[in-house]
Image (cartoon, rainbow, N blue to C red; front, side, top):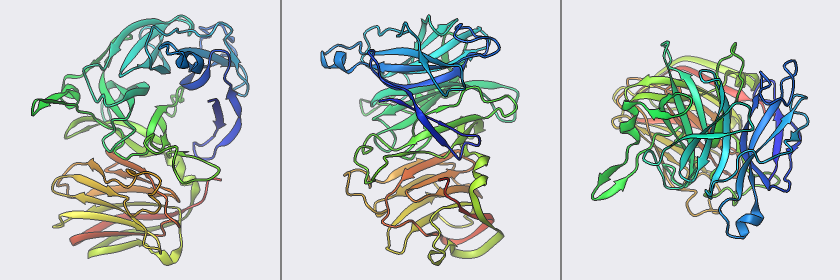
Length: 455
């Protein structure tokens, strides 16, 4: 359990560097975050050479085996050479465990209004907010989440993001919280909350309270959540810190797997990958404010060949990518007008008949993502389960943006208002993509791109 390290100039091509953080006498190295201490509040660098500071969880297995519940603590390390080498703080840990079994994954940011560092920390099935003037001395300010959202498993990898509301001069805070288990389609997933933060306390907006408030159905408590991604394979993502103001995006990469089967996936020499990078935006929808995810524009760097079609109209079925072209990596974007069709179905398949399908029910907005025949599903009894998502019903036009890789499909509907990320293990890559409906449909602004490998 180390911290690996990779660097990139474009979010697409990554250079893997030597391991950054090794286990030590305090334990192994779990998740966390890193910041630039621009004002050298820690004194670990200088004003002219501000330090990079990593904040991470120590996990002490020896204490865990003794039956103690204080085996997770928070430590820091710093770098003065752009992260190439790291020195651990000699007086770690900087945040001791108060007796909470799951006490981990610190995400730290500078809160400009209160002129303090703020840490969001996963604590069992809720979040703790801490503040510090210097990254060493941390004070608990408040807790959040015991009465809100989904609690089917432990909360992990939180992130607090100040986000502008698209098209306005207003902003809100978004709190990302990964949970395992308890996701909408089993196993791991990431829920989020929208509210205000004053440097001490996170308060849900009134409108969002109704979306994440538990309700009683048939004398049983039913928990409600709002999900960043309905697919089973986007977990534990946190945003990059210190994105330049000239860029301004909220950039996130997630872990593309699920703890339900992550240790059993049928791969060799590697296990799991990361999602494609996404830009997060806060948009106003028919259901209120929501976080949308869209692929970063830098992915255009790997386009090998691009085809564009203005419109295809009058048919019930179209072949967007045909098997005889033998393309295994592709990106597709198009608008589809259902006209009188009740459903829109996308089919990804190969010459062996292995396939994955997405079916959008136009009237209800329900999306069924089916990987029961996707290829190898034998390694886990639940891997082939149907995944369900929801999007806006009865629209005159739906926008699809999809990346199809050798062993993954990432689908963004209506500019990322609904996202489905899923891994698949076909015997050979999907080389065809078809769209079907039960009546005539119209496709517009169709872009089909063949992609190069990033390796």
